[in-house]
Figure 1: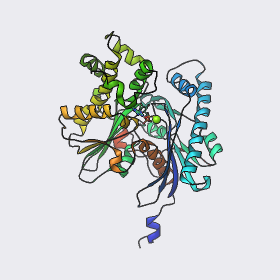
Figure 2: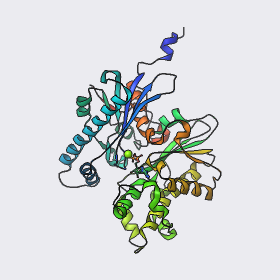
Figure 3: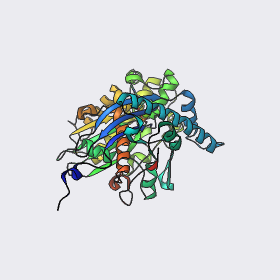
Figure 4: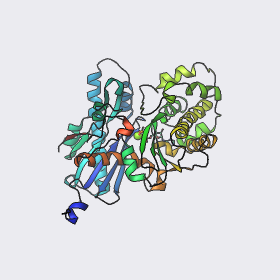
Length: 383
Ligand SMILES: Nc1ncnc2c1ncn2[C@@H]1O[C@H](COP(=O)(O)OP(=O)(O)O)[C@@H](O)[C@H]1O
Ligand SMILES: [Mg+2]
C-alpha cells in the first residue's frame, strides 16, 4: 500500500522560515523569509538587510586574530550580533506579514571568527538563546560544527541548496558566490555536485577601498576601473599554495587578511592605488576562472550571487578570464537569471538548512565537504 496522497505531498517541516546570513565581508546581515511546501518551488515572502555599526565591525575584525580577553569580547560581540539579527527578523516579520507563531524557525549562520577544520573546529559566534528570547521563534544555529565533527571542511554548505534550486538535468552549471571569500558550486550534467572556496573576493577589495577611498567597498568597481592590472603583482598574489590545492578546501580571513595582502604588496612599493585595486579584483576573477577551468570545463553558464554581483568590473574580468582559459563562450550572469536575486541566495540557503534540520534531513554533501557522510546540521534553541 502506498501512502495517502496528502502524506506524500506535505512534510511536517513545511512552512515559513527565516534565513539569516552574515558573511566574511562583515558588512551586515542579509535576511529572507521563505515559504517551503513539499513539491513546490519555495517562495520568498520578504527580504531585509541590517548593517553592522562601526563598533560591531571593529569588534568582529579584532576577533579574527588571537588577543587578550577573547572570551568576553566574543560573548559581548555575540550579544550585539544577536540584537542585529533580531532587528532583521522583526523587519522580515513586517515584510512577510508573518507573526512569530507562523514562523517555523530561524536559520542563522552566525559570524565566523575562526575556521580551522584541520584542527577539528570552526567558530561562528552568535547568541541563539538570546535571539530565541527576543523573537519568540525557534532558532537553529551552528550548522558547520557537525560536518567538521564528521571529518568535513564544514564549508561550503550552500551547494546542497544550490543543487535543489539551480540544478538542471544534462547541463553543467556553476554557481559562484562572491562574498568576502569566493566559492563555487559545480552542478554537473551527471547530477554530481562539488563545491569549494576559491580564494579572496571582497575581503581584500573592501580593505583596499577603505584605505584609499575611506569607503566600505569599491562601489560598482569604479576605483578598479580607473587602474590597470599589474601582472607581476597578480603573479605574486597567485603564488599562494591554497590556489593550487585540490578540493575539498575552504578558507577565510584566517589566511586572506590584510597581513597576507601587505606581505605581498611589500615587494611592489609605489604602485598607484587604483592599479592595486584593479589587480585585487583580477585576483578574484582569475582564481575563480582557474577553478572553473580545472573542474567544470563543460560548464554552460556561470551564475553569480553575493555582493560581488554588484561589481560589474569584477564580472567583466571574470568573463574575460574565462575567455582566456579553456572555457570560452560560457556566459557570466547573475542568479537573477534563475529567479533568485543575488543578494538573497545565501540567506535563502540558511532558511533551507533550517527546514532540513526540522525535517531531520541532511544539509551537507559529503562530496563537497569531505565529511564521512551526510548529517543533519544545526543546533535547535526552542522559542
Ligand atoms: N554596489 C556595490 N559595488 C561593489 N561591491 C559591492 C556593492 N554592494 C555590495 N558590494 C560588495 O559585497 C560585499 C557584501 O557581500 P555579501 O554577499 O554580503 O558578502 P558576505 O556574505 O561575505 O557578507 C560588500 O562588502 C561589498 O564588497
Ligand atoms: Mg554580507
